Amino acid sequence: MGQNCFHASIEGAQHGAKSLDAFLKWAKESGAAGAQPSNYMLQSDSGFKTAKEIKDAFEKAKLRLDGISAHCPFWVHTTAWTGSPTIRPFIPADVAAKSPEQIEQWAEDYIMRLFDLAAELGIKIIPMFWGVAFGWEVATGYPWGFWSGGDFDFIKEGKERFVKKTAKLRAQANKLGIYLAHEIHPGTGAMCADDFNMLVAACDGDKCLTVNADPSHCWEGEDWETRFLKVASRVYACHVKNFVIRKGLPLRMADPAWPKRAMQFVDIPTGDLNMTRYVELLIHIGYPQRYCEIMKSSTAPLIVEAESAYRDVDATSANGIRYVRDNLCFPTATGSFEDGMGA
Image (cartoon, rainbow, N blue to C red; front, top):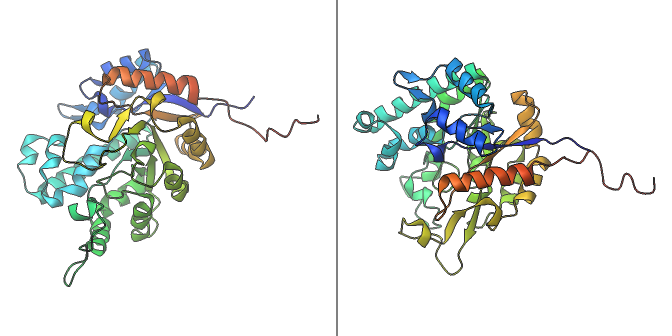
């Protein structure tokens, strides 16, 4: 029988109300073998917890440290220039009162310190997403003809802005051997596979620019197989998450209430996506092999990020952890099923 190449893990961002210890205790009790805390869970009154404190917490919980979810500070860093108030929930109030340039510098300094902590912990892959480097007009994704004119070109300017604003972060990540795994996602610096590949090309193929695969964000035409085959060699991290599309409703609408929206995140077993096929694709494109080689691990994490408009977040996540553990962590084939025929 082949070896299992995965283990069940859990994303910490949705459980931010819990302390690190409480999150890890809950994750273990829910059946996880590993966990990926958010950057906020690793903070202390004087900055970040020490690497020893974090390692001790994981050893006490008997869980693997599967990375650090750092989506928020990166999004703030590449979005601050727009002056958008949407970054405020993710930064201290005193920082939010500063200028966009000062907020961006604060985010850069914060991420640099997070890099140092990750390196000390032996974390080489950081899931995140880049902010709206191309501006809010492009982030709408609307196919109108106003992205360039006589004195402006949002795409050209956005590429130049991304290269410049991320230069120090990319240089330090490369110095420390860290891979920055962007979650291709509506309203971010790369909303589809082609967007992401455009960023890579603009940065001359920078090896630290990688992908955090998440099929639940493939709901506007580009299916998850098409997306992740296009960026196959750069998938270094993953989420396991599901959604449903309610027929007859607009995918984009000015109503923030999730139960009323057309696209809804749901429990992993009953959504529109076939999660087994998704995990098979992760194997096909080399994610577990890549992760295990970089992290010196025997298995790669399948990171549950379960959200629901109706179900309690702990219940949704615990259900997702058990589903991944019992259904998606299977022994992989070591050869063709035809090999033994006629033996």
